[in-house]
Image (cartoon, rainbow, N blue to C red; front, side):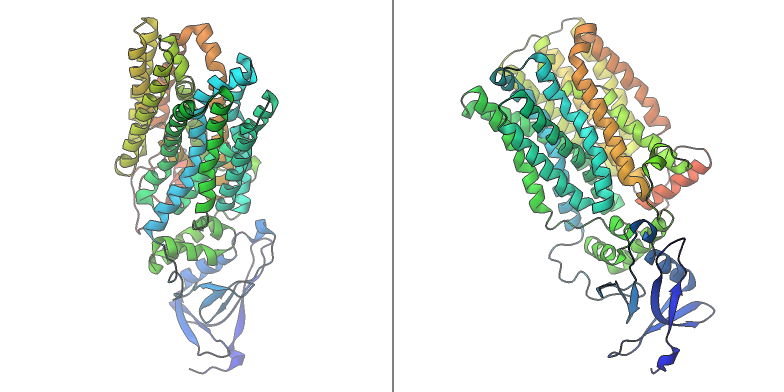
Length: 575
């Protein structure tokens, strides 16, 4: 099929605002139903691909995404039906099918998704291990470094307050540098902090290491759920994102186990607590190794004007080029409506109703999870058991029991999240947790003894972990539009960690002023109020793509209805 070269004319796509010009060297033949695009290489025959007018406009729009915010001048050219970037790389066929993508990947499809989710969720082990190990390590740190009770409380409680700041840093890093790079930074920061703590000779250096560690923990807590949510298909997304909370509990058990192990094999207070803290370097080191095979978020790549790499990741994780193309179109269309990255002002004082609704739900999720006093139960379970008459090794074994029940609840939530949905788990968890907290308060008021207090504590952690624990960051990672996802998620984690730090620092004072029974009675009342929030405000997101969740939230917000429709109308099997 020969054509005179003079018939080839560049098609220039009109820019939006100050968008860079994108030049497509194509021959366009108009017909009533399609645009026929013909491209030619100097050494190859002409290839013809038919694209509907609507499809063509969608493609053109996806190619000029993010140019205003990136500030870079980059042109995308089509040659032989392939899309080339400014460096001549050919990875994706926008108008057809590229035959070479995904053929040489040794791991792809669901296996790659599962592996990436498992590796990234290991970031949450950082927080869990710290929580668990510090409950035992502080008993040796205080006499070894001759710390006062106030200094010990500052070391224990400061992590969450600093983690709140780390979450804010992570939002900017994840949006600018990418999810994988942000995960790597979080792990490196934690390793540095844990190293400083391990060799600390004084309270000041110990607190410095604690601060650095807290920044790493906050960054990891914010990034991991977003990364998994943007990578996982809707039918397994809830379970995979909840792995982050399961990993926290696994980390807590590791911390408890590490406390018992190093208490046995090490001699002297100094060796014991330094070994406990130093072992925390192992999980982030493993995550750094796993990053070699973990792909970047396809949504982040497409939003950053790299549709080539974004499509390549979709082919890898879906292992189906047709399905990858459908999802690429859906993501590109959604991103085109939120092409400009939102500023902090637009997140903190949103004018858009959909963004305002999403931020309200997200902040509510972050607040109510910690307001129930779960952090006090975890951090100060030794004190709770000590106040009930237990001492010595029995307290360490009691800590392990609490951790096991917490892990059991989250394993059940892992299995039910994508079957019965998010809202039912939230509501059941909030109601049952409230009754368990009332039971704990009653056990203290009546001096029922350590066994009863431990039973109620284990029951509370089990019920909390059915919904309020793992599901919080599942929904938080799903409801935000991509333009604000990084910043908004960091804001949720900031509030969550700030609440956790406040409760951890103030529980001892609350127990002194109101007695342990009175403090848990107050937590029970707060937990009961949260039932209203989960029932009236929180939407159901089970089985929906992130783009569909955003679209439905926009529709419901425009009708002044904060919660989204509950039905699912998916037409394709998306990622």
